[in-house]
Image (cartoon, rainbow, N blue to C red; front, side, top):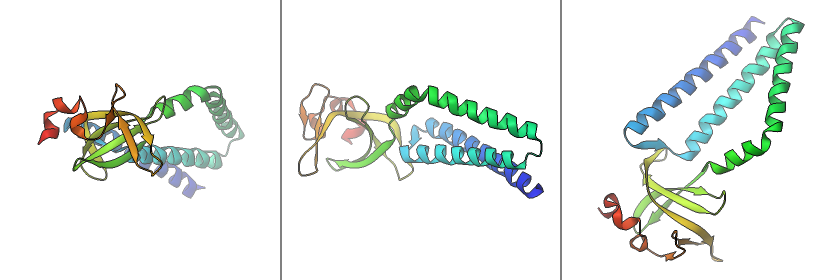
Length: 180
């Protein structure tokens, strides 16, 4: 039983340290106008959730008292009930967060695009840095992205005009960093 308690406590400690490191590193990245890419955020959140769930299961197993097990079970069922009652807002919130990113080369420049399919399909483009990090300043957005029969994408601006090159974008003309 002591080994389960040690493993449970270690799981909670590692989860807490990982979460704190993620938050602190995100703040440091913001200071340098950078951000984690979407897949890194989703991965970190998934790891923390899995570790917390593992810690709760280990807590349930390690409790000797029926009263403690019953209280933990009631708390778990109440949280499941809360999630079930609030499932629509949770789904809307999860769909509103861009969780899919893509690396596109447009006019010889590499960008990280965050797809948003919540209401209309759009892509917000940020500067590509590396496989973990992207710039935090949005350079431009392409709206109403359509997929052509050949698999390529057709991009449109906010006014519905087809975009063939970055110079066709109204936003692009005012972003000095892109003209270098």
